[in-house]
Image 1 (cartoon, rainbow, N blue to C red):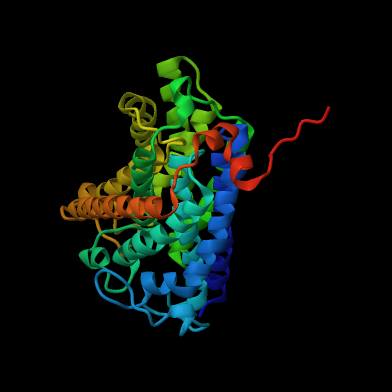
Image 2: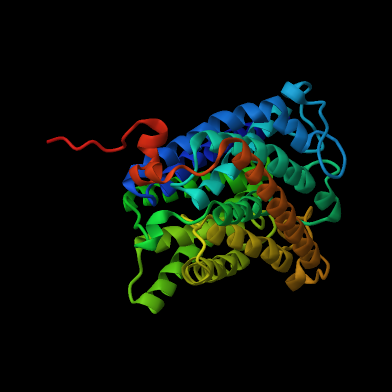
Length: 408
Protein backbone atom coordinates (compact mmCIF):
# COMPACT_ATOMS: atom_id res chain seq x y z
CA UNK A 1 0.00 0.00 0.00
CA UNK A 2 0.97 3.62 -0.55
CA UNK A 3 0.71 6.16 2.25
CA UNK A 4 0.31 9.10 -0.13
CA UNK A 5 -2.50 7.41 -2.04
CA UNK A 6 -4.24 6.51 1.20
CA UNK A 7 -3.94 10.05 2.54
CA UNK A 8 -5.33 11.53 -0.69
CA UNK A 9 -8.31 9.19 -0.80
CA UNK A 10 -9.17 9.85 2.85
CA UNK A 11 -8.83 13.60 2.27
CA UNK A 12 -10.99 13.29 -0.83
CA UNK A 13 -13.60 11.44 1.22
CA UNK A 14 -13.74 14.41 3.58
CA UNK A 15 -14.03 16.81 0.63
CA UNK A 16 -16.95 14.86 -0.83
CA UNK A 17 -18.61 14.68 2.57
CA UNK A 18 -18.55 18.50 2.68
CA UNK A 19 -20.50 18.60 -0.58
CA UNK A 20 -23.74 17.46 1.08
CA UNK A 21 -23.79 20.37 3.58
CA UNK A 22 -22.72 22.53 0.63
CA UNK A 23 -25.72 21.27 -1.30
CA UNK A 24 -27.89 22.09 1.70
CA UNK A 25 -26.88 25.76 1.49
CA UNK A 26 -27.06 25.77 -2.32
CA UNK A 27 -30.62 24.44 -2.27
CA UNK A 28 -31.56 26.15 1.00
CA UNK A 29 -30.83 29.61 -0.35
CA UNK A 30 -33.16 29.01 -3.30
CA UNK A 31 -36.32 28.16 -1.35
CA UNK A 32 -38.52 30.55 0.60
CA UNK A 33 -37.36 31.48 4.08
CA UNK A 34 -40.09 29.33 5.68
CA UNK A 35 -38.58 26.19 4.15
CA UNK A 36 -34.82 26.56 4.48
CA UNK A 37 -34.51 24.44 7.63
CA UNK A 38 -36.42 21.63 5.94
CA UNK A 39 -33.79 21.55 3.17
CA UNK A 40 -30.94 21.58 5.69
CA UNK A 41 -32.66 18.87 7.71
CA UNK A 42 -33.23 16.66 4.67
CA UNK A 43 -29.58 16.89 3.63
CA UNK A 44 -28.26 16.22 7.11
CA UNK A 45 -30.62 13.31 7.79
CA UNK A 46 -29.47 11.76 4.51
CA UNK A 47 -25.91 12.09 5.78
CA UNK A 48 -26.97 10.12 8.87
CA UNK A 49 -29.23 7.52 7.25
CA UNK A 50 -27.04 6.76 4.24
CA UNK A 51 -23.88 6.48 6.32
CA UNK A 52 -25.56 3.64 8.20
CA UNK A 53 -27.18 2.09 5.12
CA UNK A 54 -23.84 1.99 3.35
CA UNK A 55 -21.84 0.22 6.05
CA UNK A 56 -24.66 -2.21 6.93
CA UNK A 57 -25.61 -3.41 3.44
CA UNK A 58 -25.40 -0.71 0.75
CA UNK A 59 -21.69 -1.12 0.05
CA UNK A 60 -22.07 -4.88 -0.29
CA UNK A 61 -24.96 -4.52 -2.74
CA UNK A 62 -23.02 -2.01 -4.81
CA UNK A 63 -19.48 -3.39 -4.81
CA UNK A 64 -19.27 -6.96 -3.52
CA UNK A 65 -18.65 -9.51 -6.28
CA UNK A 66 -22.05 -10.62 -7.52
CA UNK A 67 -23.84 -10.93 -10.82
CA UNK A 68 -24.41 -8.50 -13.70
CA UNK A 69 -27.19 -6.68 -11.85
CA UNK A 70 -26.31 -6.47 -8.14
CA UNK A 71 -23.49 -7.23 -5.74
CA UNK A 72 -23.46 -10.08 -3.26
CA UNK A 73 -24.17 -10.09 0.46
CA UNK A 74 -20.75 -11.21 1.70
CA UNK A 75 -19.75 -7.72 2.87
CA UNK A 76 -22.82 -7.08 5.07
CA UNK A 77 -21.80 -5.00 8.06
CA UNK A 78 -18.40 -4.56 6.34
CA UNK A 79 -17.55 -8.18 7.03
CA UNK A 80 -14.29 -8.79 5.20
CA UNK A 81 -13.76 -5.10 4.45
CA UNK A 82 -10.62 -4.20 6.34
CA UNK A 83 -7.19 -2.62 6.15
CA UNK A 84 -5.84 -4.70 3.30
CA UNK A 85 -6.48 -3.54 -0.28
CA UNK A 86 -9.11 -5.07 -2.54
CA UNK A 87 -7.04 -5.13 -5.70
CA UNK A 88 -9.95 -5.20 -8.16
CA UNK A 89 -10.79 -1.66 -7.06
CA UNK A 90 -7.64 -0.09 -5.65
CA UNK A 91 -4.36 -1.89 -5.08
CA UNK A 92 -2.54 0.82 -3.12
CA UNK A 93 -5.10 1.86 -0.48
CA UNK A 94 -6.97 0.00 2.28
CA UNK A 95 -10.26 -1.53 1.25
CA UNK A 96 -11.93 0.47 4.01
CA UNK A 97 -10.59 3.73 2.54
CA UNK A 98 -12.19 2.89 -0.79
CA UNK A 99 -15.43 1.99 0.99
CA UNK A 100 -15.72 5.30 2.85
CA UNK A 101 -14.84 7.28 -0.28
CA UNK A 102 -17.70 5.59 -2.11
CA UNK A 103 -19.97 6.15 0.89
CA UNK A 104 -19.83 9.89 0.27
CA UNK A 105 -21.10 9.38 -3.29
CA UNK A 106 -23.96 7.27 -1.98
CA UNK A 107 -24.85 10.05 0.46
CA UNK A 108 -24.98 13.00 -1.92
CA UNK A 109 -26.77 11.22 -4.77
CA UNK A 110 -30.25 10.95 -3.17
CA UNK A 111 -29.73 14.41 -1.69
CA UNK A 112 -29.66 15.84 -5.22
CA UNK A 113 -33.27 14.72 -5.75
CA UNK A 114 -34.44 17.07 -2.98
CA UNK A 115 -34.27 19.96 -5.43
CA UNK A 116 -37.21 18.63 -7.42
CA UNK A 117 -39.79 18.26 -4.64
CA UNK A 118 -38.60 21.05 -2.33
CA UNK A 119 -41.29 22.61 -0.11
CA UNK A 120 -43.79 19.78 -0.66
CA UNK A 121 -42.77 16.43 0.85
CA UNK A 122 -43.66 15.05 4.26
CA UNK A 123 -40.51 14.35 6.28
CA UNK A 124 -41.41 10.79 7.35
CA UNK A 125 -42.20 9.81 3.77
CA UNK A 126 -38.99 11.50 2.61
CA UNK A 127 -36.84 9.34 4.89
CA UNK A 128 -38.49 6.10 3.79
CA UNK A 129 -38.44 7.04 0.10
CA UNK A 130 -34.75 8.01 0.27
CA UNK A 131 -33.74 4.74 1.94
CA UNK A 132 -35.67 2.65 -0.57
CA UNK A 133 -34.40 4.65 -3.55
CA UNK A 134 -30.78 4.37 -2.46
CA UNK A 135 -31.12 0.62 -1.99
CA UNK A 136 -33.13 -0.25 -5.09
CA UNK A 137 -31.92 2.38 -7.58
CA UNK A 138 -28.54 3.77 -6.56
CA UNK A 139 -26.92 0.54 -5.39
CA UNK A 140 -27.80 -1.50 -8.51
CA UNK A 141 -26.78 1.26 -10.95
CA UNK A 142 -23.56 1.75 -9.01
CA UNK A 143 -22.85 -1.97 -9.36
CA UNK A 144 -23.64 -1.89 -13.10
CA UNK A 145 -21.11 0.85 -13.73
CA UNK A 146 -18.33 0.27 -11.19
CA UNK A 147 -18.84 -3.12 -9.54
CA UNK A 148 -16.99 -6.30 -10.44
CA UNK A 149 -19.26 -8.12 -12.89
CA UNK A 150 -21.52 -5.09 -13.52
CA UNK A 151 -22.84 -5.16 -17.06
CA UNK A 152 -22.03 -1.54 -17.95
CA UNK A 153 -18.51 -1.99 -16.64
CA UNK A 154 -18.15 -5.16 -18.72
CA UNK A 155 -19.59 -3.32 -21.72
CA UNK A 156 -16.72 -0.84 -21.59
CA UNK A 157 -18.69 2.37 -21.05
CA UNK A 158 -16.77 4.99 -19.07
CA UNK A 159 -17.85 6.95 -16.00
CA UNK A 160 -14.86 8.28 -14.11
CA UNK A 161 -16.58 9.85 -11.09
CA UNK A 162 -20.34 9.45 -11.36
CA UNK A 163 -21.92 11.19 -14.33
CA UNK A 164 -24.19 8.18 -14.87
CA UNK A 165 -24.23 6.72 -11.37
CA UNK A 166 -24.84 10.01 -9.57
CA UNK A 167 -26.12 12.80 -11.81
CA UNK A 168 -28.18 11.10 -14.50
CA UNK A 169 -29.54 8.65 -11.96
CA UNK A 170 -30.60 11.29 -9.43
CA UNK A 171 -31.57 13.86 -12.06
CA UNK A 172 -34.11 11.70 -13.84
CA UNK A 173 -35.48 10.52 -10.47
CA UNK A 174 -35.92 14.20 -9.64
CA UNK A 175 -38.05 14.74 -12.73
CA UNK A 176 -40.22 11.73 -11.89
CA UNK A 177 -40.86 12.93 -8.34
CA UNK A 178 -41.57 16.47 -9.53
CA UNK A 179 -44.16 15.20 -11.98
CA UNK A 180 -45.97 12.85 -9.62
CA UNK A 181 -45.96 15.07 -6.54
CA UNK A 182 -47.39 18.02 -8.47
CA UNK A 183 -46.70 21.73 -8.56
CA UNK A 184 -46.35 23.96 -5.53
CA UNK A 185 -49.60 25.80 -4.91
CA UNK A 186 -47.93 29.21 -4.87
CA UNK A 187 -47.00 28.86 -8.56
CA UNK A 188 -50.55 29.74 -9.54
CA UNK A 189 -49.77 33.30 -8.41
CA UNK A 190 -46.02 33.72 -8.92
CA UNK A 191 -42.74 31.81 -8.94
CA UNK A 192 -40.96 32.43 -5.62
CA UNK A 193 -37.50 33.99 -5.81
CA UNK A 194 -34.48 32.61 -3.91
CA UNK A 195 -34.70 34.01 -0.39
CA UNK A 196 -30.94 34.14 0.26
CA UNK A 197 -28.58 34.38 -2.71
CA UNK A 198 -25.46 34.60 -0.52
CA UNK A 199 -26.36 31.11 0.76
CA UNK A 200 -26.57 29.92 -2.85
CA UNK A 201 -23.11 31.34 -3.54
CA UNK A 202 -21.73 29.79 -0.35
CA UNK A 203 -23.20 26.43 -1.34
CA UNK A 204 -21.72 26.74 -4.83
CA UNK A 205 -18.29 27.48 -3.40
CA UNK A 206 -18.47 24.48 -1.06
CA UNK A 207 -19.60 22.24 -3.91
CA UNK A 208 -16.81 23.47 -6.19
CA UNK A 209 -14.27 22.91 -3.41
CA UNK A 210 -15.59 19.46 -2.56
CA UNK A 211 -15.78 18.47 -6.22
CA UNK A 212 -12.00 18.28 -6.37
CA UNK A 213 -12.29 15.31 -4.04
CA UNK A 214 -15.24 13.98 -6.03
CA UNK A 215 -13.33 13.93 -9.33
CA UNK A 216 -9.61 13.98 -8.53
CA UNK A 217 -10.17 11.56 -5.67
CA UNK A 218 -11.64 9.08 -8.13
CA UNK A 219 -8.12 8.48 -9.43
CA UNK A 220 -7.75 6.59 -6.11
CA UNK A 221 -4.18 7.77 -5.79
CA UNK A 222 -1.97 10.84 -5.51
CA UNK A 223 -0.81 10.67 -9.10
CA UNK A 224 -0.86 12.31 -12.50
CA UNK A 225 -4.39 11.17 -13.25
CA UNK A 226 -5.62 12.92 -10.10
CA UNK A 227 -3.83 16.09 -11.23
CA UNK A 228 -5.49 15.90 -14.65
CA UNK A 229 -8.93 15.38 -13.08
CA UNK A 230 -8.31 18.31 -10.72
CA UNK A 231 -7.34 20.67 -13.55
CA UNK A 232 -10.14 19.76 -15.96
CA UNK A 233 -12.70 19.95 -13.15
CA UNK A 234 -11.76 23.54 -12.38
CA UNK A 235 -11.54 24.40 -16.08
CA UNK A 236 -14.98 23.06 -17.00
CA UNK A 237 -16.64 24.76 -14.02
CA UNK A 238 -15.05 28.09 -14.95
CA UNK A 239 -16.05 27.78 -18.61
CA UNK A 240 -19.62 26.86 -17.70
CA UNK A 241 -20.01 29.71 -15.21
CA UNK A 242 -18.81 32.19 -17.82
CA UNK A 243 -20.96 30.63 -20.53
CA UNK A 244 -24.14 30.90 -18.43
CA UNK A 245 -23.38 34.54 -17.68
CA UNK A 246 -22.92 35.28 -21.38
CA UNK A 247 -26.18 33.53 -22.26
CA UNK A 248 -28.08 35.65 -19.71
CA UNK A 249 -26.30 38.80 -20.87
CA UNK A 250 -27.34 38.13 -24.45
CA UNK A 251 -30.87 36.94 -23.70
CA UNK A 252 -32.06 39.21 -20.86
CA UNK A 253 -29.53 42.03 -20.93
CA UNK A 254 -27.74 41.40 -17.61
CA UNK A 255 -25.74 38.52 -16.14
CA UNK A 256 -26.78 37.34 -12.67
CA UNK A 257 -24.94 35.86 -9.72
CA UNK A 258 -27.51 33.09 -9.58
CA UNK A 259 -26.80 32.27 -13.22
CA UNK A 260 -23.05 32.08 -12.73
CA UNK A 261 -23.56 29.77 -9.74
CA UNK A 262 -25.92 27.54 -11.72
CA UNK A 263 -23.50 27.43 -14.63
CA UNK A 264 -20.55 26.51 -12.45
CA UNK A 265 -22.47 23.61 -10.92
CA UNK A 266 -23.57 22.47 -14.38
CA UNK A 267 -19.94 22.49 -15.49
CA UNK A 268 -18.93 20.41 -12.50
CA UNK A 269 -21.69 17.93 -13.31
CA UNK A 270 -20.72 17.62 -16.97
CA UNK A 271 -16.99 17.08 -16.40
CA UNK A 272 -17.56 14.41 -13.74
CA UNK A 273 -17.79 11.34 -16.03
CA UNK A 274 -15.00 12.67 -18.26
CA UNK A 275 -12.53 14.03 -15.69
CA UNK A 276 -10.15 11.09 -15.89
CA UNK A 277 -10.34 10.65 -19.65
CA UNK A 278 -10.17 14.11 -21.31
CA UNK A 279 -7.67 16.95 -21.54
CA UNK A 280 -8.00 20.67 -20.95
CA UNK A 281 -9.33 21.81 -24.34
CA UNK A 282 -12.16 19.24 -24.35
CA UNK A 283 -12.94 20.34 -20.77
CA UNK A 284 -13.40 23.91 -22.00
CA UNK A 285 -15.76 22.71 -24.73
CA UNK A 286 -17.70 20.53 -22.27
CA UNK A 287 -18.07 23.47 -19.88
CA UNK A 288 -19.09 25.99 -22.51
CA UNK A 289 -21.70 23.71 -24.06
CA UNK A 290 -23.28 22.37 -20.87
CA UNK A 291 -24.60 25.81 -19.94
CA UNK A 292 -26.38 26.01 -23.28
CA UNK A 293 -28.12 22.68 -22.71
CA UNK A 294 -28.95 23.27 -19.04
CA UNK A 295 -30.14 26.85 -19.59
CA UNK A 296 -32.40 25.59 -22.35
CA UNK A 297 -33.83 22.92 -20.03
CA UNK A 298 -34.23 25.10 -16.94
CA UNK A 299 -35.17 28.50 -18.35
CA UNK A 300 -37.04 27.69 -21.55
CA UNK A 301 -38.35 24.11 -21.66
CA UNK A 302 -39.43 23.87 -18.00
CA UNK A 303 -41.70 26.95 -18.05
CA UNK A 304 -43.27 25.82 -21.31
CA UNK A 305 -43.87 22.27 -20.06
CA UNK A 306 -45.20 23.48 -16.71
CA UNK A 307 -43.60 20.91 -14.41
CA UNK A 308 -42.28 22.10 -11.05
CA UNK A 309 -38.68 20.95 -10.73
CA UNK A 310 -38.34 23.50 -7.96
CA UNK A 311 -34.54 23.89 -7.87
CA UNK A 312 -33.71 22.50 -11.33
CA UNK A 313 -32.32 19.17 -10.18
CA UNK A 314 -33.32 17.64 -13.51
CA UNK A 315 -32.35 20.63 -15.62
CA UNK A 316 -28.82 20.79 -14.21
CA UNK A 317 -27.93 17.29 -13.03
CA UNK A 318 -29.68 15.01 -15.50
CA UNK A 319 -29.20 17.19 -18.58
CA UNK A 320 -25.65 18.09 -17.58
CA UNK A 321 -24.88 14.47 -16.74
CA UNK A 322 -26.18 13.21 -20.09
CA UNK A 323 -24.04 15.74 -21.97
CA UNK A 324 -21.01 14.81 -19.87
CA UNK A 325 -21.47 11.08 -20.45
CA UNK A 326 -21.91 11.54 -24.20
CA UNK A 327 -19.05 14.04 -24.36
CA UNK A 328 -16.85 11.38 -22.80
CA UNK A 329 -17.69 9.24 -25.80
CA UNK A 330 -16.54 12.09 -28.03
CA UNK A 331 -13.44 13.42 -26.28
CA UNK A 332 -11.95 10.54 -24.25
CA UNK A 333 -8.32 9.80 -25.09
CA UNK A 334 -5.95 7.02 -24.11
CA UNK A 335 -3.23 9.67 -24.07
CA UNK A 336 -4.86 10.96 -20.89
CA UNK A 337 -5.71 7.57 -19.39
CA UNK A 338 -4.38 4.38 -20.94
CA UNK A 339 -6.96 2.38 -18.98
CA UNK A 340 -9.79 4.23 -20.73
CA UNK A 341 -10.64 4.33 -24.43
CA UNK A 342 -10.46 6.66 -27.38
CA UNK A 343 -13.61 8.64 -28.12
CA UNK A 344 -15.10 9.42 -31.49
CA UNK A 345 -12.87 12.47 -32.09
CA UNK A 346 -9.76 10.43 -31.28
CA UNK A 347 -10.46 7.54 -33.61
CA UNK A 348 -12.63 5.34 -31.41
CA UNK A 349 -15.92 4.59 -33.12
CA UNK A 350 -17.49 2.32 -30.50
CA UNK A 351 -17.24 4.25 -27.24
CA UNK A 352 -19.94 6.81 -28.03
CA UNK A 353 -22.51 4.06 -28.67
CA UNK A 354 -21.55 2.38 -25.38
CA UNK A 355 -22.03 5.69 -23.58
CA UNK A 356 -25.39 6.14 -25.25
CA UNK A 357 -26.51 2.68 -24.16
CA UNK A 358 -25.38 3.27 -20.57
CA UNK A 359 -27.27 6.58 -20.45
CA UNK A 360 -30.44 5.07 -21.90
CA UNK A 361 -30.43 2.07 -19.57
CA UNK A 362 -29.90 4.24 -16.50
CA UNK A 363 -32.70 6.59 -17.50
CA UNK A 364 -35.15 3.76 -18.15
CA UNK A 365 -34.39 1.86 -14.94
CA UNK A 366 -34.40 4.94 -12.68
CA UNK A 367 -37.69 6.21 -14.14
CA UNK A 368 -39.46 2.89 -13.65
CA UNK A 369 -38.25 2.09 -10.14
CA UNK A 370 -38.52 5.66 -8.84
CA UNK A 371 -42.15 5.85 -9.95
CA UNK A 372 -42.99 2.50 -8.32
CA UNK A 373 -41.27 3.45 -5.06
CA UNK A 374 -43.03 6.81 -4.97
CA UNK A 375 -46.43 5.16 -5.38
CA UNK A 376 -45.69 2.57 -2.67
CA UNK A 377 -44.54 5.15 -0.13
CA UNK A 378 -47.44 7.44 -1.00
CA UNK A 379 -49.92 4.60 -0.45
CA UNK A 380 -48.37 3.69 2.91
CA UNK A 381 -47.55 7.09 4.40
CA UNK A 382 -48.83 9.81 2.09
CA UNK A 383 -46.01 11.82 0.57
CA UNK A 384 -47.32 15.33 0.03
CA UNK A 385 -47.97 17.63 2.96
CA UNK A 386 -51.41 19.15 3.51
CA UNK A 387 -52.29 22.51 1.97
CA UNK A 388 -52.22 24.28 5.34
CA UNK A 389 -48.77 22.81 6.11
CA UNK A 390 -47.46 23.98 2.77
CA UNK A 391 -48.82 27.44 3.45
CA UNK A 392 -47.04 27.84 6.79
CA UNK A 393 -43.89 26.12 5.55
CA UNK A 394 -42.10 22.87 6.29
CA UNK A 395 -39.84 24.39 8.92
CA UNK A 396 -42.75 24.80 11.30
CA UNK A 397 -45.08 22.06 10.08
CA UNK A 398 -42.46 19.29 9.96
CA UNK A 399 -39.79 20.37 12.45
CA UNK A 400 -41.34 22.99 14.73
CA UNK A 401 -38.45 25.38 14.14
CA UNK A 402 -37.80 28.75 12.56
CA UNK A 403 -34.65 29.69 10.68
CA UNK A 404 -35.07 33.41 11.34
CA UNK A 405 -36.45 35.13 14.45
CA UNK A 406 -37.52 38.76 14.33
CA UNK A 407 -36.55 40.64 17.49
CA UNK A 408 -38.36 43.88 18.24
